[in-house]
Length: 466
Image (cartoon, rainbow, N blue to C red; front, side):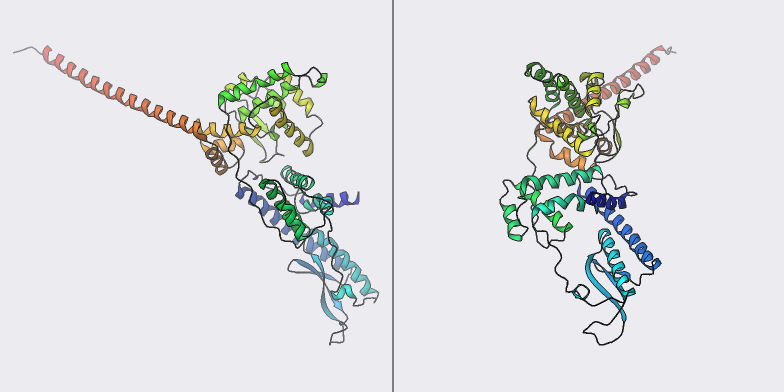
């Protein structure tokens, strides 16, 4: 309970901080958020550091705090050290290895009060602690200890938002699945754990997780970065494949075992509706499940059929326009029953972890009904479709909730041979149409000139000969 209270208290530092919603997958977007968080932490630390010294002074504590590099030192008028030559009290600094962060600031204040009391009672002595010969600070012995303290430490320097909670969840999941928690934390064991991972993807995940953990807990073990493997080739579904796959939910419902519980019997309708929304709007699955505004979706005022994405999602609040408006009717996306099923399904599932489970269920339903692509492929299909439709990249990117750079990267990466063929065909078709129009204009001009000549000849013939 005490640990939870401390965690809540430390995260209160972020109460008035709103990190930029720029985690769109791009390096620049991520770094913008990291830099904003670091700047906020520094300003908050400077503010708290000043307040701490003011509290010490107001309490008549004859000790102040000073910064020295990445540590906080205590400063006070102290007796000369046993090895000193001055022979009288003078202003000195004591280094206790306290890190210069918000958590360390609380420790430094406690140490300042303790030192102040010793000085006031004339009980101060130069012992091993104050001379700097203190025993080495406590070491984290096993990965289990890191795992148990990871979440608390992670949010001491980050605001709890949907994106940071998701990142923390991923790191802790890697710990559970890929790292032997009972092992001691040593350089040789770390290397062995990474080398024995079954895939390059797992090696990259473990490497990144341990580097983050070791930085948080100040563990002096070098972990080399492992580059993640190149993304596998994606076959983005065509419009025809998307439409035919939509019907697979009903096929599944007619062929499934009769053992399904009655209260879940119609759930396939909800997941089919989710599929249709992902296909039509290019949404991230979480953007359908995080506090959806279903009343707006069904409202008669929603004449443009926009979907409102909640602010506690990856890139924040936005209003999404359908990429394929005719699919709203084709997929019956305004049908009340599946929407009410969704409303009831997510009614008590509004926290981050519950929404994560719903998102995972979305993927499992794709596999259950034998759809041959992933939910995110529908999003990539919309990115490509936007380009093929001639929608300006900025407008399409805003609709999808990412930067123009990421948008261009996505459709260039997954554009595929079939789409290139279609683009060339459409381009040639457009050229042919333009050429035909040019010929028609030329013919009309010739006809116009011919008519002018005929009119002139007619006028000449009508003039009487004298």
